[in-house]
Picture 1 (tube, rainbow, N blue to C red):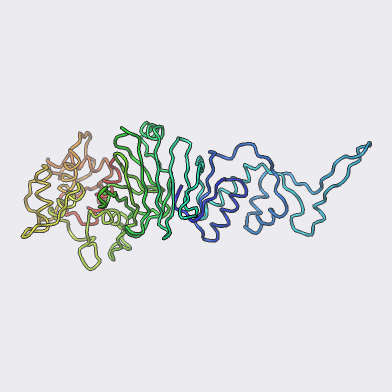
Picture 2 (picture 1 turned 90 degrees about the vertical axis):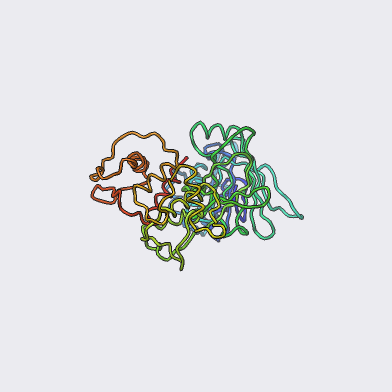
Length: 431
């Protein structure tokens, strides 16, 4: 289920047409259909003249006419001893455009309606989702209980102010199937990201006992690179999940145990990234509070990155509060943390970081995994010995790219936009 203004239970012709009409009127509508497809027996495959006219009004007449069908204008039955055919109905006499009944396989008709609905931003069809009950509060229905094919159950409801709260109890089967295929468990609750914590939808995810760390995906209707997941702790404090990743359909994150999540569009609109190649990557890292701007609503895309900046970024990524104490310089907390972890020796924090130094810092942060192969860049011979494995790891994993002419430019200063892009790629590729 999902954040919605109207929920239609049952994806038959009436439910699908109603959903389509509401969506075209700008109403957020979700249609729940308990089956996985429309290929089943129906009580009737007739589409009557008034329905044909409605399809014409909706602009679907041409597509409907292309479906396999048989047209009936007269209804005739044998009567009397001689079996003489008697015309009980003649639709051809109707003074309308569609003066016949169309006999069409209903699954084809429903597929057509589903495809048309998918083109509408306010329409969502949930297959394999059965409504099993209603939620009533203060004398009105404001939510639905549902169950999916894998046994996952949940509820979704909207309060008097229009804020959505959803709950999903993930089944053992859903978790097991996802882990076997190395996929995320898709939470059957689509929401629309809010602009801040107050307007954000809340999703409560309950996992089976002993499920351990589990990757989940929460469908989000308006997802973009700045959409983040925010964990709501038991004491009410909130924490951005820095490695939450936007997908084509939502936001993915790893949780351990029952979790309350808010979905927020935390996008940052820096003036100097609006027409820059790094716009999405900068938005990704800035929205997760890994990077800040440089002031005056600028990110500083071409400014060099210092070693202290990188140490601070990595510390934030690890969940460290890098706020300086009295008398400390802004980079000292992050640098001391990075030094304690063996990521850096702590020297020259105000010096520009080179591309090979940057790759090395990130490689150590990741745990210095084993690597094999050879750098194939034309300037590979200029790479320092300490950075060989790091640059190989970064380029093999798509974290660092060359700079043109088959060169990696190991000693060139890393610009802020380049570092932001590397960090975004690192987080998006990390499990």
